[in-house]
Image (cartoon, rainbow over all chains, first blue to last red; front, side, top):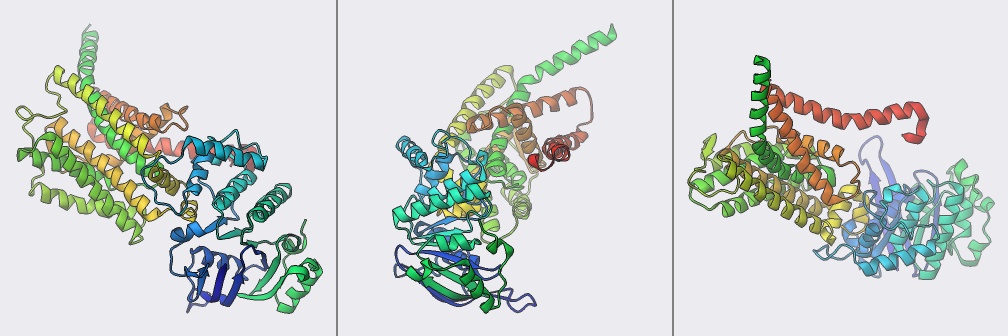
Length: 263
Length: 311
């Protein structure tokens, strides 16, 4: 269970550019919740994810996972609880290292990095099987440097890295936004499959309203550093893009073309 | 006739200097391996090396003058280099000082540290005629032994590094250098990985300095001047020759040694042509600039030709 309580953060405090990125945001995710997050630019979506990941520290409020307060734990120390996939496909993997080496690093997330071998033979076999399920032809290219893969392939590898240890919370920050539509939908359905099979607690930011409605059991809309709409279950199933646009107008935020022109 | 005989004389003098060239190249090859760890693996241009090279040489000379055996003196020199790297690492990570500046600060500080170690002497002699050292070049036999020793020594270093960078810690260091965001997202303490890598790097550079002091029979306050450029030249020359060994880490380290040897070969050539050695640092810098600049220019030209695809 992820618990965010009264989290606030202000950027460039005391300057003309002061921005209240999050204002008293509270959010609780039950185990197995798959939450899609929508909102305009600067609504605070990525800031929220970064606070959960620990790359940003809130000015006020707390973040806890399974009852354990992690607000003051540095990002790399809480990494074992989390899985992250970024918008930029280059961010989630080490380009100069092999596919299997990247996976082996993810496998050791949260463990001491000692002088045991960085990767074993048994692991290689396992990784090859895991990648085979992805059906991207990567299972025969385990020793290729990740830098030689396409954006979609890299996102798939990152997705596997983020989920292979069954994290307490999976954070997806517009992880298909940089891909072409066909690849994006492939990575997205792969995401859905992995999340469902592992019953992973997931927070997925998306610009695409259709995707936000189609995937997950819960949807939140953010605007101006606040959660302005939170809907789940059957109600969410009935949601249309029109409903969401209306909500947007009510909030005074502007929906971008990218959000409307989905699919 | 006169021309021919002078040419033969020139050739023979050049040939007779070759064993020393190889010795020097191998010694600096170890320095280049150390620099490779920071420059290539960590993506950190570490200017500490000018100071840590001299630190290694002076530490060894002072200790040997006091009667300490060469093996122990080299170990202490290595340790001193580790500490120098540690300081740069701490300046960079805990105080947030940019890489280049952190290296410069340590390098400048080491100038004073080196003078403290040498008790103010600019040059500390080693009695290489009477004291046992591992690298010498007074006689041909010594040169041969020195070269054989260096080959074994370098092989051991490369073997150890090859093993280390295959371990969990070594992989974590490589990930830190390749993509820090990814490393941290995967639970790697990138701060310590940088510090560890910089320490090992400077330890090796100091070790190379300690061998250089044995070779020249003294530790000198100036012996590390421009070491970074020599090391970079060795790396870029070596990697250009070993272009096909794209991913083999051990071969990359061998390339550093080959690069350093070629560097000293060219240096000797310049010396024997009676060209002023004062110009050599200029030439070295130019070589490094060309090797680092050409890939960029090539990319830029391709960009113009085929548009975005090759950018």
